[in-house]
Image (cartoon, rainbow, N blue to C red; front, side, top):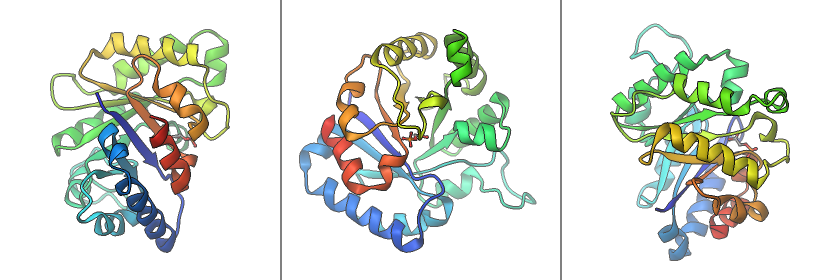
Amino acid sequence: MKKLIVGNWKMNGSVQEAKALIAALINGLYADEGLLEGCKFAVCPPFLHIGNVRHALHGYPKIAIGAQDCSALENGAHTGDVSAAMLKDAGCRYVIVGHSERRSDHGESDADVKAKAEAVLKHDMIPIVCVGETLEQREAGEHLKVVEAQVNGSLPDKSFGEIVVAYEPVWAIGTGKVAGIAEIAEMHAHIRALVGRGVWILYGGSMKPDNAGEILAVDNVDGGLIGGASLDADSFLGIARAV
Ligand code: PGA
């Protein structure tokens, strides 16, 4: 199975910076057939930049577009929200839901995340459902139980549509502290047992070119969700090469 490498740009970048980043990614990835053969790629810009990124990707179908969140609601009087239908119309193939930053900044519960994931599936896109324990939960030995509850509570019913799960230990996001190989292997095997074979399981949390090869070789790691390193084309390409 090809690995899936997803860049999560988070709340970063001016219009010009987003255009420059996608141009550099297109140049780098399309210059190397081997990279496109070995992996599937997606970038998740802020909503504001999706239109420009789509425009830049015209003629480069091997880089998909994702969004970082969506509303669970269909449409209407919900100021500031963006619906799954709008994202589909804007060219998105993936939507990240339940990222730990949204769970903490916006108090999103597992039920909220599940409703968003279902909206994404309903509009023929693929939800990337994020789960992951905090440092306190890991130190208390509760990490498997916590993630299991998140998986059970946040994933839509398995039977309908393609789903991606991203395991992102909260303590490894943006901290430079990557989870150990044994920790990743244990959690990914646990998630695999819960979700079965048909679901992609990504690892996220301080993935960089120098640790990506080792992480992506772990059993049940089907790809990566990359934050900080996805803002730099060379780092993102370096991760792709590490596969
Ligand atoms: P990071 O973020 O790679 O900067 O740790 C990963 C994520 O939050 O998706």
